[in-house]
Image: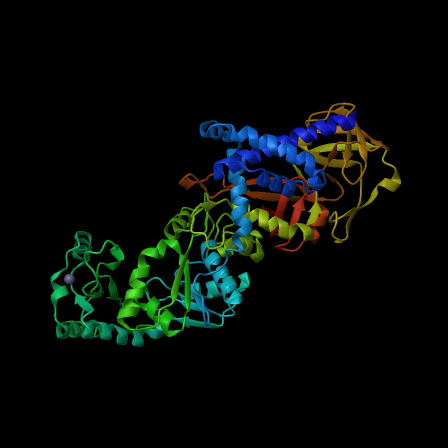
Length: 579
Ligand SMILES: [Zn+2]
């Protein structure tokens, strides 16, 4: 009889699965086909392979039903499964991401570069590009370079170069060579002069407002018509420090009326007198990113550039400069930027939050800078998995931080010690504990051999108030991994019970009054709520933890059973942050 019911339930489930598959198939291809339904079902329930005959009959019925419906009816029926279909689609993209991790048109020797500007801290978006480049360099047996794009003297600092190198080393990304844009200034001057001589660049003395207006209105200024001799004379004056900052720039003579704003006679050099962290006061004329990047790439034999989609508009300019100078052209591949939902990486906005005292600094565990992720206890491998899982997709969408945390949990779970944590402690006094039950050893991990925590128990236990609220007189409850207790008396903030030999079903976490310590946990939430700072981005609570916690190392990851994974953020303060 029981098996008959189970069989009916199973059949109902199979029919439902087949119906869902038929709807999906019909939406995707116009009509549903039996083969597709069966394939999907078998991949989900491989054990059904032995029941092909029955399955085929059921599949046929499902196909007939759905194919007999109008398009509108199918659409209506599919509404119920929208979420499921979306989830399946996302999974499919992720699963095939590794397969789609390839670059179009790669041939011959391969070299790519990671091009940070040392004007801030690396974040997860940078890491995505760096990990992809590392993977491609491995895949194509090529080289990976580290290229510091440092031609903004007022913004860049050695401190940022050092921080980036430290972050990259921590991520496990190694480079074949390291070079700096600012080491190439002399040769970049030479290329600028070639463009002036060939009539493709001119010195412009318009002020910033006029420059902006002429670009907006797509009208060339009077300097556009200057002859080569005049341009060369003004350029030499720029180099000779005859102008103040913003008084003169060198511009490319491209298309002032181009639909692509990046092509409207962009600036190639500007005057900057700030001291440069690497070059000091050696140079006054500094190239823009648009000018130095293609040239330095080409000079270093970069064959392929991977960059986020937001820069696509500048591709035309990148190629134009190399064409005008008859230099070798790398291929450019665009990829979606990795953004984390309800978070941000804008330097200006982060600095504001730091100033307001709302976050501690760039390593605040709510942030997605690399230094913050490291402090929080995220492993490089988790970041790498997230970085690579979307392949070369250009579909931009903000990803939930939970995706990263889930990857990280998979990695830390096998080695994270288990401990009990009690929030809002409630005292439970137990009488009648046999002497032999007082000495206790509890495994530090259910399946990995990590050893034991050992305690001598007294009569007084702390349990979570949330658990205590469910107790009644006469309730039987198991103190997990110790023994069971029958509740005899309940009072305000405390309870009394007696030792039980039998095992109770309901298991709760506890700490013993003879072996505990106070601790604080910080549960990290989203940095932002909508556009604004989330005032509840950190929830702090205090509680009691087993005394074994004193043996943990700073930075070690543990799992508080039923609460979650935490990292020891400050051992002396017994402060844990959530993972
Ligand atoms: Zn001008």
